[in-house]
Length: 177
Ligand code: VGL
Ligand code: ZN
Image 1 (spheres, rainbow, N blue to C red):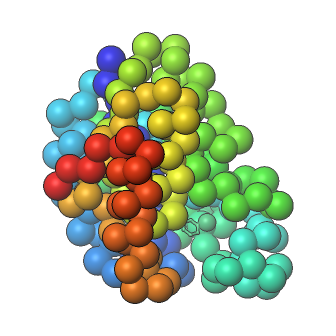
Image 2 (image 1 turned 30 degrees about the vertical axis):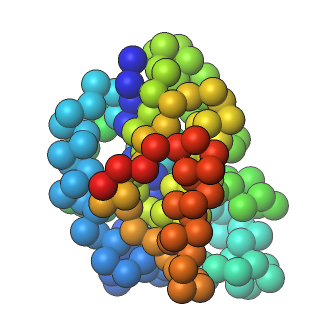
């Protein structure tokens, strides 16, 4: 069985959001296409308490974003929710970055329950949560395909997207357009 993991396609990571990724909302159409072709679709949400350690107020690297229950934390309205089988919230522990969809969630158990051996991964942001989720999927022994055209990167430093892709390929992740 194959599953699609949609990482953090949330308002706060799209233009106008608190931690907007350039062109972030352009992943919506390719993601809906991938979801239509996938038998099992899981969407993760970055879902932080208001005092999360990754926020600048707490000495972390990021502006306040994806606070649980806020509009910014909702999935982008363009995502066809009828195609999403499960929504998983992550990043809830205040003292952990929680970039990976596997961290502190039921994701691995869910995939095993459904006999998933291959995951397709897309969403935001390539150089943080997409990367961390894809690497953890490899560590869990899964075949992993990252759909580059259905991701966008934060690129805090220019080149971060390319570095992320190198790291993914080195770990045995297949990167496709
Ligand atoms: C993310 C930065 C902070 C992401 C989440 O979803 O890639 N990036 N929190
Ligand atoms: Zn976050």
